[in-house]
Amino acid sequence: MAINAQEISALIKQQIENFQPNFDVTETGVVTYIGDGIARAHGLDNAMSGELLIFENGSYGMAQNLESTDVGIIILGDFTDIREGDTIRRTGKIMEVPVGDALIGRVVDPLGRPVDGLGEVKTDKTRPVETPAPGVMQRKSVSEPLQTGLKAIDALVPIGRGQRELIIGDRQTGKTSIAIDAILNQKGQDMICIYVAIGQKESTVRTQVETLRQYGALDYTIVVTASASQPSPLLFLAPYAGVAMAEEFMYNGKHVLIVYDDLSKQAVAYRELSLLLRRPPGREAFPGDVFYLHSRLLERSAKVSDELGGGSITALPFIETQAGDISAYIATNVISITDGQIFLSDSLFNGGVRPAIDAGSSVSRVGGSAQIKAMKKVAGTLRIDLASYRELEAFTKFGSDLDAATQAKLNRGRRTVEVLKQPVHEPLPVEKQVVILYALTHGFLDSVPVDDILRFEAELFDYFDAHHEGIYETIRRTKDLPEEAVLDAAITEFINQSSFK
Image (cartoon, rainbow, N blue to C red; front, side, top):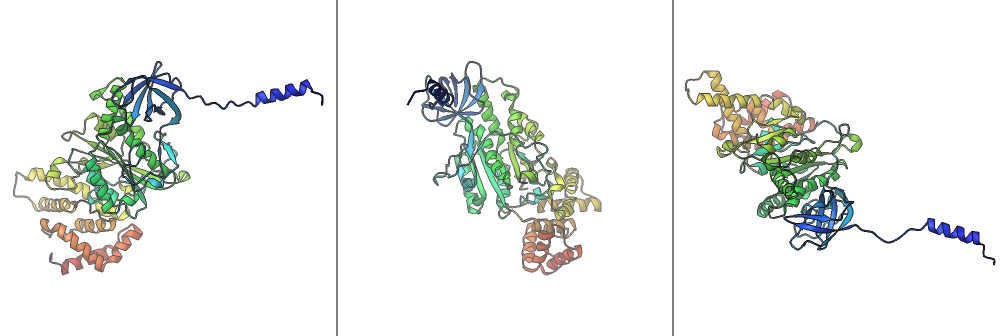
């Protein structure tokens, strides 16, 4: 056969056009500085912000500062055996964490690695830790309540699904207990809970996990922990890892409750990082973008529109104050980006009012739309009653001869304070809360001695469980109060057969 030069050249041209080199080019750099959880590297010219980088020893880092000469990296994991001059290479992936149902019931670190000794987490789904929050039109307003099981919250500062409610107070005022109770109360409510422990002692986290396990709440809870002994990058990352796990569920139409315990420690970890990365300090030596750190985190909590599945993330961020100072930098920052705050008072806690919620300083900016109709009806006057009681109480310390109206107000106030007390880890279903608050606001407790109120409450519930289950059922089904006459008759019937008459 004759060789045709044109055919050959056409073939060669085709081959050249379709040529695909199969060698892999990975951009590598050299570590030029290594410090506390921080490295700088030269040569990674095309690195992306938030990109995962891998060191020689197998540790991962995340690109934070992209400068003209080098890249500032936060190290996620062990940095003790990284040396100057080590090579570092790009992965081309933005920092992401494993997500999905396989994580439920597990205790993991901010990188999604299990720390509970129950073997690996088998999931193939991941989500980036930083994602833009849902926009204005992708959201719905908060309309359904998230029952915490605590009378003082569900009646006075209700939390709705998709809300961000800040829990703020000094150390040892019962902040964590509120969040744990709220998680325990989600049993059977079709909620997934995520508890993010930032900068806590390992033993404390262990105690919380055991509490959740004991009450059967670990079946629907993920615990993300970055303990106090871990390097600051992990503490900074933990809340973002938690919310990335929550988003997976939200966009699948599920409801999530996420607790950040606490964001003050995250801000401190971020300050440490920023100063090590040589970013300029601002107020209280925090970097200028510490507000943005928290706002881009909390804005990811939302109730999304029906087109996106109608799921929600409800956030309970914590802030620890120093001597009740809610005007400190981080505290004011977080107050301004949340939809209300629950303020826990040191003096109330020590005075035996637990949960120690200061009704005067606490507020929910969603309010009544996060309550069922029945609760709205019975809790309507509670706030004002409490506020006027606190005011009168201060005045009446001095005088003894009071007119009947003032006396009645004081008596009602004392009983209100007493009813709002609640033992730890005993959340109440909403129908029981409604019944006791109804009895309070309609004067059934006015003749009961203050010391006997909690006993009265327990016996009333037992009596209703036995004889008036239908009333509970009506409240659960209609979300409204039954006929007042029916409820009055049932409570009167209970009082007549009890020792309180």
